Image (cartoon, rainbow, N blue to C red; front, top):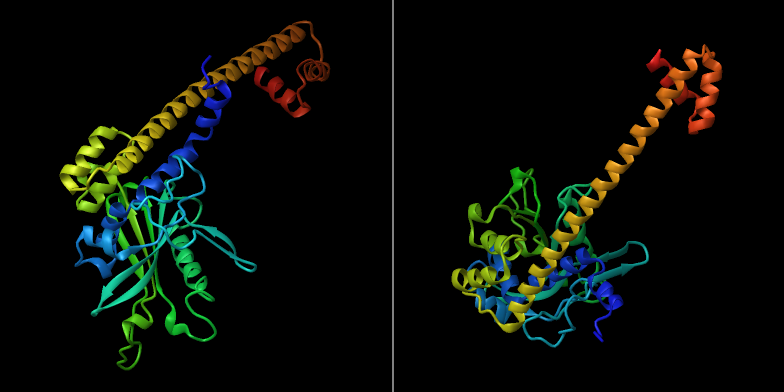
Length: 335
């Protein structure tokens, strides 16, 4: 007897959308992928080599989402361990980050520490401007440092934070773009020059993907290929290795394959759901059409018998469970 029971199968495929999202986050949390993002989006790493960033500057292990897709691999060297992905405050509520980790950066001959958050976002218009959420996440990462990075009035110890948003379905006008929002100094009167490190404490970056053939930059092409729902896992691995010199370890290759398989499952489920909804809608329309014909036939028959409109209205209300207003509408349409 097959030990892979129906219950086991149902448990495994339940909520495939959540599993796919979790797989995306796990893939994005690979050090080499994070290093590509950091080099192209964060000014502190522009002059660094990608391998150097991955091997030297990324520290710790982040908690990646809350849904486990693959077996726990918390001891894997290639996955990052660091700051927790949830901030809790009695007054501010709870925010859960997709990926959050710590990194050091070489600035002016010394190492500074950064707190970096990366979010994978499907819906560009979730009912509010996405950039405002990015700024909010930055603010929470700043306020959460109290009691850990600094205490009392030692604000000089606040670490710079980044919130990077990877938008997979942006509007056409935003496709294949990378935009940074940050704090800048502006003299309204006089000429003052504050030390940049004292105010440059947060930045939000919006990475909007599009067609991989029109990507424009290496990072956009990398992410478009990596998160594509159309490119197969074998092709993805080949492109990552040949075009971006990313060594395909067994772990990374399995993550890519897993995400592709989940993506296919989500797509097939979506198609099936659409078919079922179409069938149901057709049935409902057919039923309604039959009811309409029945009401019309009853009104015409009673009118031929010279039954008054008041009686007809009462009869069709009782027969078809209509309100008086709806019955009146049918009467007016026929007369």
